[in-house]
Each structure stands twice: as C-alpha cells, then as structure tokens.
Image (cartoon, rainbow, N blue to C red; front, side, top):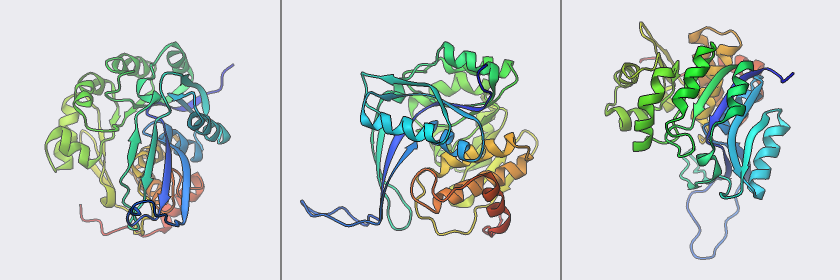
Length: 316
C-alpha cells in the first residue's frame, strides 16, 4: 500500500545556483572570489516541498525535470530528504528549469532564469490517484502551459475529497490572471505576495487586494509582506504576524518557505494565528543562510526560533 502524503506540491521546480556575496559583476574576463556557491532544489512547488519535508511533513512533488545533470541533481537532493518523486517526470524535450542568483550583501537577489521542463509538466492519473492518500495540495503551476485550464478540475476533485487546497504564483502574468479565474473557486487559501497583489489587483492595500481574490472565489488569503511579515485575511477577521528582527543573508526562497511553514504548522495542529507565525519564522530562518533551506533545521527548532526570536514592532 502506498504511503500517506501530508502535502502534494504541483508546479514549478528549479535548480537554484546561488552565489554570495556579489556586489557587482567583474568587468571583462576578470574573476572574483566569493564566500559560497550553493545548489538547491527550488521553485514554488519544488522549494515548498523541500522546506515542508524538512519541517517533518510526508511530501510528494508533481513536476518535471530535463534529461540532464541539473535534473539528476534536483531529483537526488529531493530523494535524499525523503520526498516522494514518483510524480517527478523526465522531459527529454526541455532542460531542467534553472536559476542563477547573485546575492548582494543586503540579501537582494537579482537573477537569470532559464525556463524548462517543469513549466510544461502535465497533471495526470498518477496525481489524481494520489489524492486518495493526501491531506493537502499546494498548486504552484498558475498560468503554466502544461496545466493551463486543467488545475480547476484537479483542485475541485481534491476539495471534494476533503483536502485543504492552497495556491501560489510564480509571476503575476496575464496568463496567471486568466488561470486564476478558474482556479480560485477551488482554493481554500490563496498565497500571493504584496507585489503580486499590486500587479493583479491594482492596489497597495493587502486587505483590499486579498478581498478582491476572495470575491473571485478564494476562501481566504495569506499575503506575504516581505520585511513586514505576513497577513492572513479571513472572511470575518485579519491576523498579522510581524517579521522577526534579523539581518537577512539570502531572501531567495522566503516566499516559498513561508507557504511551506504555514501549511506545516496547520498540518501539525497549530491554530491559524500560530501557523502564520510559524510560517514567518520558517521564512526568517531561510533568510539567515544561503539556498532554499538557509539555516532551517526542522519543526522543533522552528518552534523554538518562533518563540525566542524578537519580532519587529507590530503596528499593522
């Protein structure tokens, strides 16, 4: 009998190549010595799965990699931590999605991204069959060619079986906006950033933006506020979790890790406010190191960090 799945992540999976610190690019053919170069599985699905597994969830990933060394590295690193990769297919027609990130001393991370196989990965019978043994589904393929217009049926089926469904964006594109019209009625929690709210809802007000997505069908919204923490907007209340006082090293995977932390906290019995704080604490630990996991160690260590590390002044 197949093992239970606490979280099934569907969508973007990349190999992140992170270089730190990079104040500027060398001129001509000059070189530069850096402190660290790290390889990490990442992406709105792959990174979320990687973090969730580190927090103790039994995690599976539905995505695709290319038939190349990058894909082999991604699969190996995912399997090393115990992620179910049986739905991670190999597409010989596309390379593995890969991102190169030069990290500035303040934690900012401009990047070069090569679109690849995960953008075109379909959702099929294996994923539907897995719903019978799954508790939570995280949809992270909004607007992708491989799943465009197909996610609504999958999420509808997941909700019909009693699963908790979440949804995150990779980019606020026109295709994503169109796809959201069909997806949101089947999403329990939509998880945009404030920048994505600005682009898709045309407002700087996170509550107004969240409620616009709820009017389109989402039951609730978790808005990622970067250095201001996160805001959970429910039909009858709002909950703010302030960010921790830290000096960030690399903010690359903070959004994905916040999603993973909230889902993990909720799956492990925390109430909504505590799960939101746990998500923010997860993101803070990721920001304190280089790569998808940063200095993240596990669930208990994150609980301790959440309770012991000071937060910024809560004025929201």
